[in-house]
Image (tube, rainbow, N blue to C red):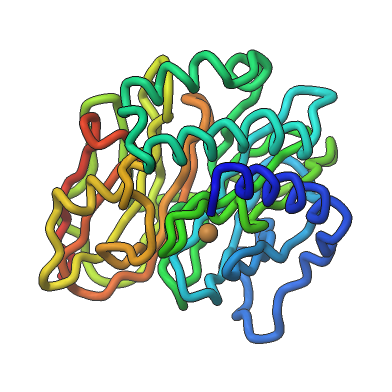
Length: 311
Ligand SMILES: [Cu+2]
């Protein structure tokens, strides 16, 4: 896809999505009952390449239960827009800049350092200073369901997925974006209780290197975020017999040509995206025995991973 057609796709997708998003939020018939009565669950279906879910939800503690019915990895990243900014402006002023940078990286006309400089120059000030990345379900493999709990302030949000297709096109450019209004009414849900804690800082993942098989609720704490570029997040991936940890770390770098590009080098079972330092996130997993990896989405040079054995 040429750079121009990616731009056009963005514009079309953003105009269409705003009017076409369904407003349901009812649990699909096959979804099992909610785990805790004090949980407010928002049901989302992730397809190749669209989200189906409610476009208006209450604020406070909110659990996104996202079933991936597609054939590719997906995630749901929430960004709260500054007052007055719209999904269309997000697409035109932010999405298009990332798409253009990716095209230039792919063409080999710029390197990662130059890509960072272009983003610093071309991303609008309202995005870098006033948009708030607020978490959401991490990478989840086809057929898996992610369950991630975040604490949402009222506002206008964009939910997006920017995993790449086999051809290297961001899912958001193909329509994987959903506008969500978070109202002032509180969900009434309480903060979840966790049995595992993971703390992410700019140079380390502080979490267990062994876990029992079965269900866990993982509390995610962000000690800090880098001053520029991607914030910290955390994902859990099951390693295949031939998985190479360095390869997974490199895959987590969107600036790499094969980074975030289908197929994924491991089986992602969930995680929590970047959220403000004072907003803990939680995610639930049901683990089979095997080799797993805590891994952060980052430029490969700053990548972090930690192996965890499940038995
Ligand atoms: Cu996706």
